[in-house]
Image (cartoon, rainbow, N blue to C red; front, side):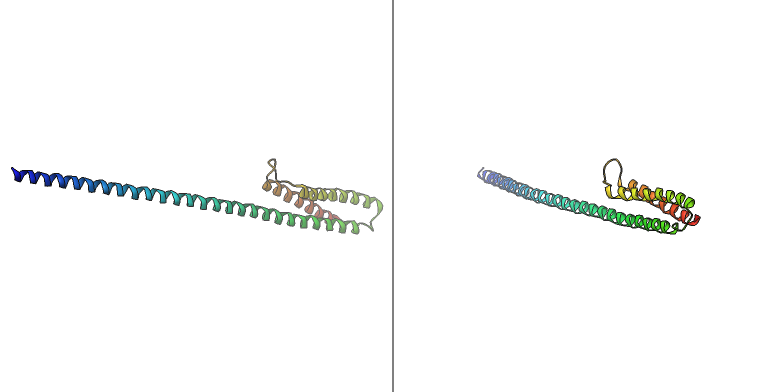
Length: 160
């Protein structure tokens, strides 16, 4: 019987050691898992921070591009309005030698075109990008109006 008791003690001891080692292994794995989770959370936080910086940089770039497009449009439109102004001055000079009755009609028509051109310049200077009218709509209207004045000046010059 002594043989069986010692055999039994060995089996119990092995089982206890195996159980203890299994528990230690599980605890070690859980700690590694916790460390892994902490590392993953840190990586996610870093990625979110990078994304925030990237979005801010992109937004700044878009705003900068938008301002650059506006400044370019404003410069080009101002040049076109000034070209119209020079054509108006040229027309005024060319009618100086005409008869008074013809001259009065031409001066009246030139004054209308000059007023339209001045109004376009005022609109360009006073434009604020608000919710009522977006930039693209404003640009389209402004380009159409400038082209209309230029076309009228060209046709007017031909009729002299």
